[in-house]
Length: 298
Image 1 (cartoon, rainbow, N blue to C red):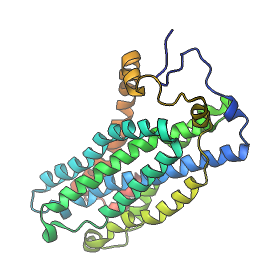
Image 2 (cartoon, helix red, strand yellow; image 1 turned 135 degrees about the horizontal axis):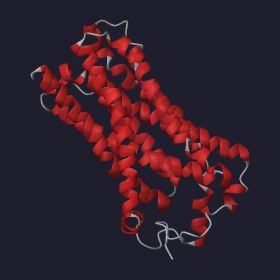
Image 3 (cartoon, one colour; image 1 turned 45 degrees about the vertical axis):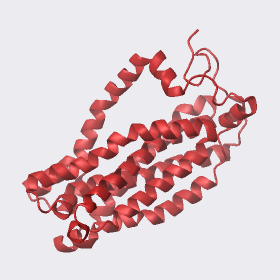
Image 4 (cartoon, rainbow, N blue to C red; image 1 turned 90 degrees about the vertical axis):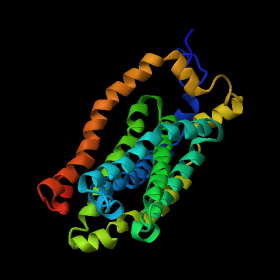
């Protein structure tokens, strides 16, 4: 009989007793914590995309031609997406062993600190080539953190939900990511009153530094959440860590579903990335559209 990556058989019922008996207030708190935490993490992750579209070319690659500067800044943006699977693997592994709550606190902390650090990176005229290298380093940390955030937050929400509400609770992370996108655009749109010189000199750093406030909010919300009841049940039954690694089992037993999932998500993701990054650069450089106008439109 087929087995799932967790070691359960495919026909075995999903554990329901610990979750279905949980107070409704606690479940709502978990849903809110997943949505708020994801909104903060995706705000952090996506303000980098906006900065790469408007700032990093002229600030960190000023010695290159405009076209090369755009390519280089988007190259630093891309490494964050490449690092996301690593975050999902690493934090997924530890989440199955030490708990969802602990790993989600770590992902939130790593994301917040890396984002604030980006806002403090000196320009190349002060530290030379080390400046773009630091951008890449902190962007990799962002990618690892957001990769761990997505899987952990979804599982935390679903494992707290009642059997008939798992689809709704699983949407908390997606809802939070959309809110984070809106916040990232709003943060830069609010700087529309700055001159171009002020914006490129220090204004672009403000949305990155503002994440320290959001980090405090996110930590307050997540520390108030209890561990997943499914994880607690696994610990009591001593099943955590038994069987093959979940990723290995998944690739071995469901390779076509993995490829199907990647294919289904690839198209919308590329359209989303184009709308949030490339179009901002294209509109401001090619047609001279004011940055606050294109950000409001986006």
